[in-house]
Image 1 (cartoon, helix red, strand yellow):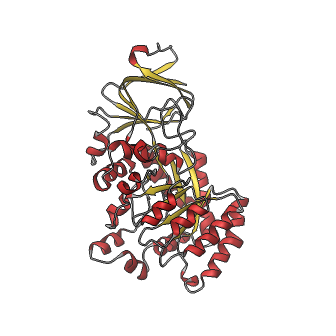
Image 2 (spheres, rainbow, N blue to C red):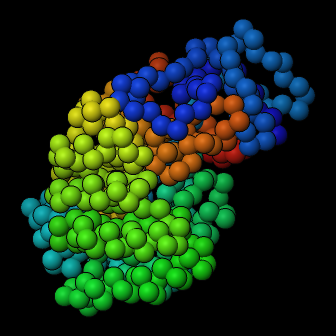
Image 3 (cartoon, rainbow, N blue to C red):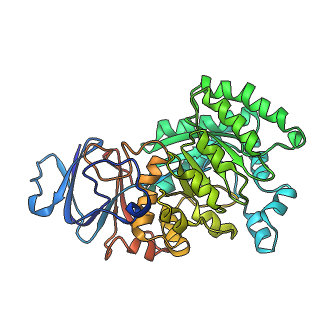
Length: 413
């Protein structure tokens, strides 16, 4: 199928030469074409340019008039926990009433609350609930997404989550990458026996995950009160034996040296980074590890925001993602992530869009096919409603300005 999009007000994130990521000052550069066209054929971007040289449509070409509208590559959401059993709205109220993240966890809330519900829900119901959330994310412009396990904390629970993620990937045109996160928290029965649970992950869970090809990445919640740096290293090493690349939760509440360890283990990304030290920034320099900020998590649970300006000033890249989960970010809206990055983290719209597209794709290992308007890349694009410019996406943060989503060359929503 061929689709010709004409009269595009602004064609955004146009890169004639594909790049893996953008860093430092480059993040402030967002290439655009004014009054442009975009040609899609089957599942690929074939051509683009100014309307002055727009090709004639054939009788078999579907033509879309984008007068007054912007066209962008779809968002690349590189960090989510979209597969979960139930909401945790009571914890939302608990936080309003003054309880901290740690206090909620100590009274049976937090991750362990989701674990209990996950292990009780039938797999088919879990799939249907997760399917609704994925469909909503796609309507909001997400065209590639990473989804983690981590609410099972038992062999069967983790495998159940990963099977649901695999089924979503099989049934939806969106690009889905899967992450094994059994090291999300210690189950109550292993609270005083960390080695026992880590042994369970390494000796029982990992072989089964690998056998059924259920994950692309491995993750650990490397944080005070959760998994230590040494425990994280052990799990990263174990995952590497099965070809699972690390993407690690780190520096959400404290800085304990986790970023340096992740860089040394060639982690694809380090995610959260609400607390960042000079040593952390030095460790990230000249590495292939992508820092990932989760600004709507900071917004929702009122913790510090990732210091984007310091990271970018140091010449580093930065990606942003939703952290979609039932406890700390119950939203898969990447548009609000972009807005929050601008409003609260003082990123420019150019930096935020780069962080949510090309750098988000890099943080999933897919920037060769996703994240920019480049000939030969996947035909994953979104068309806005009529707007003044792409600046309106973060400016009008309360509005859904996405009118049409195309994935793999097919109109989805």
